[in-house]
Amino acid sequence: MKINRTIAAGAAALTLSLVPALALANTGNGNGPPPWAHNNQGTTGTTGTTGPTGTTGPQGHAWGFFCQGESKKHVAGTPGTPFSKCVHDMKALASGSATNPAKACKNESKKHVKGQKGTPFSVCVSGGKKLLKSQS
Image (cartoon, rainbow, N blue to C red):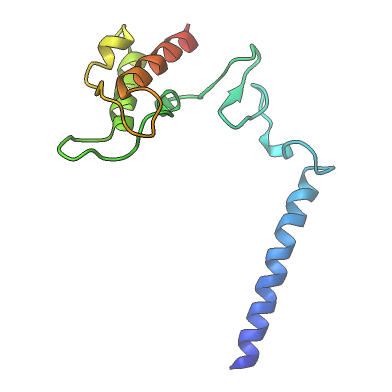
């Protein structure tokens, strides 16, 4: 029984030691992104994809990208979180059902949340402006 545990532990250690070596082997020289991370649009980054025009932002329906500063903590007595409300507002802006970020974010709180920069309303409005700018 003890021998089986020893063999299993040795096999697990060997497997875990090979994973980083194989990952470096796939990148060629170990510098830069791996070959499968490239696309025809540009190179991948930490916040999105840099396209041919040099703009950085989300691809597709990533409305939460513009709400990254919002709190994801639930507030007692209110449905959803400030982040989820902001995502809903960004969807309305992207679909065209709302044209003004301030009007789209009117359901956000204007009270400061301790430990957060700005109010949920101000973060939502600034994200909405960035969304509209990225669409044009």
